[in-house]
Length: 172
Image (cartoon, rainbow, N blue to C red; front, side):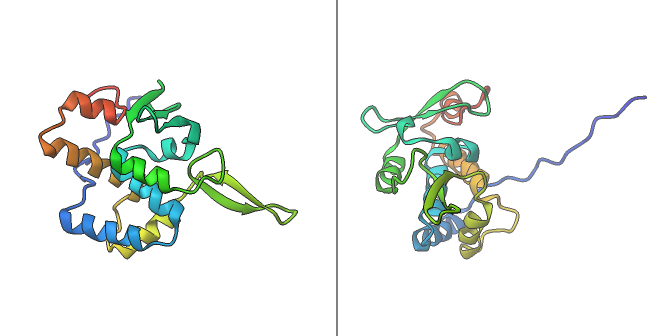
């Protein structure tokens, strides 16, 4: 018994053209959902994965030395990425309600409010994506990771090795 190789069409590129990017930034800025808006901003400005942002704690952000420490990334080894000016501005203005950076409010049985890390934010970021009228198949957070990578690659100032390290990929 032998199973043949499955051919997958991976031609879809998740990237935004300048008009779409401008519409998305306008929708993010108009959003009242600060958690969803800022997680989208951080994805766009750092290329971080959704899970990395969900696990991000305030003590992983070194404002003084200018880096973000990523614990348990997809590749397995902890990583440091630079804290650029745009990401710094997002994080400095973000509410600090809990140990984790991105949190959702939950009401306890006693009626008090508890701040818990996200395990899903798709519905919330999709509201912003829909307000920007982006294609239905554009994955809001992963697509912004691709947009970040595309912008750096096409800038002519970032080589593939640096891009690999910024995205915490094992290979270029």
